[in-house]
Length: 260
Image 1 (tube, rainbow, N blue to C red):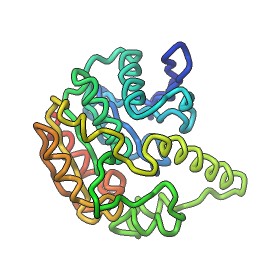
Image 2: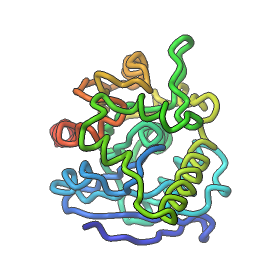
Image 3: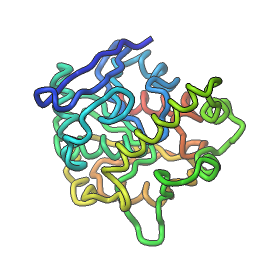
Image 4: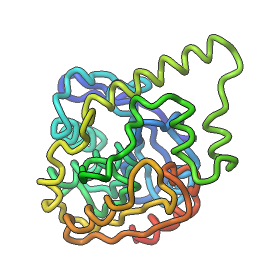
């Protein structure tokens, strides 16, 4: 099981709740909109090789201070400061969708922080005629239909399983609203907040992973990221948008092979 701590930055204006576990080189993993668990099976796999640090974004599940962060650039700087507070100089950076965008912003703005970069269906660009599904406002039933390649997979079934008690259900719904609002602040309604102008600054070798049945984020964006990052390649794996949950073993293997 991972350890847990609160890491303050900016004289306590922002406080990160960070889960950490494993041993080996440092790996910073950044979550996305619909990650309900802070330590999914993917991170268990990665912790076999790396010291994984998985912070919750400000405003999400015990991390505070989202109101003190202005925009995506400021968010990336907050993660730069978090790495400093953790005593980490450079790390492998990894994230899914919103977390992939945040990892890319960090690698672009602070190139020395990224040893290598693994982005899973990253958000952050915009192509006319290839709109990304607006997962911030979609009703739950419509959202669920888009997230998975196999709707009966263990990951999908576990994700949609609701808490048993009414009290837990209400708490889960409140947490989800807070999570979507905290992240949506940085990307809604159009997710490209200037990342397209900064991707050329990324110096780290970059692996982009995409699900072959991603119904949220069109695969055309994979080619766009590759075109804008100097040392980027893309690998397509079997799975949907929640590739990191649905195909955790394949994602962990691809990332570990790339990070070597």
